[in-house]
Image (cartoon, rainbow, N blue to C red; front, side):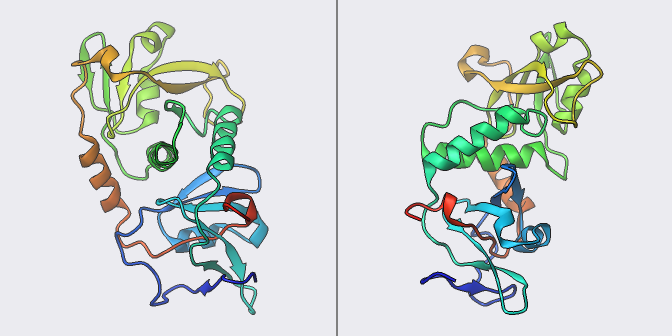
Length: 241
């Protein structure tokens, strides 16, 4: 254990109160990103300390997995801000290498807050366990699918893909694009996957009503209510480590 690190066992009084955090994103040793709503969910998903190379809270703080005397995984307190450049590079690489797992492609995240919002919001939307209302406009007709899979299932031809416009609950607007599948999951019978590339909202102003960003953020907070604190992470993601 390094100086300044402190084990935070589950149920400790030192854990943040519900509502202070909206989940944590962990990067595993294969470079894949996963959003966890609770510390219990995260700890149950890892078997050893080095399996999580980076864990970041919604405010950008880094954490680390530690093993106690009984060889049980636990979490450190916040270790400081995550290395922004490293995190952005890892995020963009994961998207390039596995389009079926990361189909939402927002604008290039130039700033720290933009990157954090992009990661937490898109991972939430891509793997939501409850229905999430989207807006989809095709040939002037607006519908409200409840998942990305629902949207993709309606795009049964190339012409439909080209004409559709999709808006997420946070207000971001996308156009669907079919690209070659690299992973084993999520591709259609033609070996393609659908990704959703963000476009300027002004390009389709007035075509999509949608929820406001504040409404979507509120819904996400409710979905993650009751959070304990989470996470852990080794050196690659913590600034100055």
